[in-house]
Length: 279
Image 1: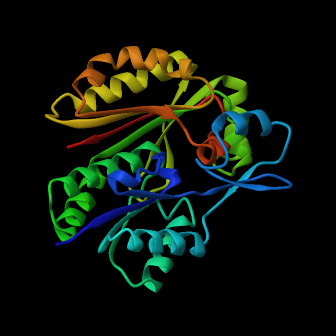
Image 2: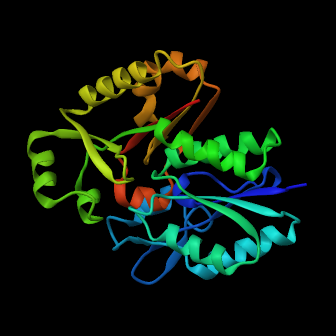
């Protein structure tokens, strides 16, 4: 009988849960004098306290990091691995995971989520639900791959300087944002890259726009997973949470948390994210 482990990276915004068979390899947050493992050695609180005083960047896990996790999974008696990685268009983590799996001695299926943060995480949770139902790895992977098209992310930030610093927006776009108070509503495009879904004036309009788009997308959906993530302060999602209250109550799964330090390094403290998966 197959015993299937789910392997992912910390860009999924999912914490490791060994008892549930979910294993997470951290990305790194790098400062001038040290590197810290996301979710394990650094919190978003520490990141936001330091990033305006020190240079902060991120890097992918090493192949060895994935090797160690795969060996640990095998030691626990798992026979197969379903690996779900952050979009390879956004991080080198996917390729490090791929090489480690190819070099290992366990059967596996590797899936590019073509997503990041909670949308990647919701795909992991969907895969876990299929493992719990007792499906085989081939059927699970087919279903998971088929669900990528049903993922959606809306994110916005009030201060674009962190995205400019991380290379996610050009300096020209950042200047426009600072001058005209534009809040870009960002999404993940089909190829797994970050795109500007809509530019709106001011945070309140961004909240209203995201709430409308989310309601519209889920209006005819029988089942869905929903997740909200915030940067520095949970109060940053208070307004959007209120506007999505009916959808939160109706969700098959609802997750709420801060973004991880790795994600916060690129988005900054003023971000919030709405993610959902139509079942």
